[in-house]
Image 1 (cartoon, helix red, strand yellow):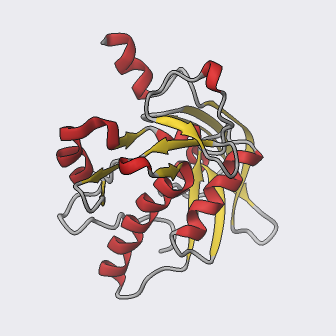
Image 2: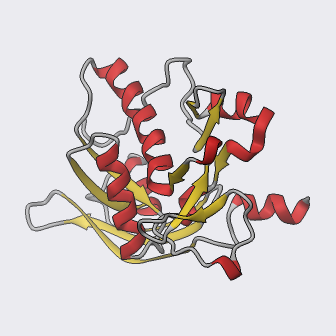
Image 3: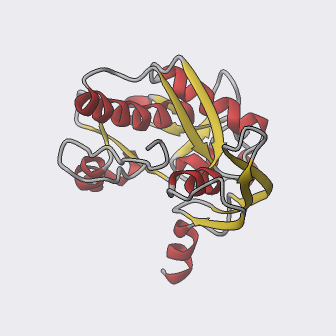
Length: 216
């Protein structure tokens, strides 16, 4: 009916793909998701997680605490140390994840999508948005719209958007915490109308990884 979202399963039947990338072996095989978590633990220096929060971020050596990170020599942005002196950009890591999702979509739909809506943390600025678009291009997408994660969660939930209501969505992820306040109702054509009244978030300090570190 156009109001409900359907989750595309991965080839193993799971409906979630961890944002994890690992580079393993002498041939530098790239693994993504669950396989990256399983096999990448043998060498955690080349297991990359929570890189979304570093998208489009300038590298500052005096403030850097991560042993995996370095500066991209071309842009000065945060990049990641790979095997054999290889430097992997944050956008490239994100592209690996997008490609894995596109593979799953192609297996389900019979054709590879070339357009997508990519959700982003509510506090992403222009640099973070541009890095996300670069990752999408590297993954082979031709058309991309960027939308805030809590806003899209509300739209995908299946509400009757023509009914007048105020919706507050909070989104606590592995890297970020976001909130959106949304008003729905009928537009001029009597169809459902969505207006985002406010949206904001925090990329650092309130993600699941931060809770893990505090507990540890």
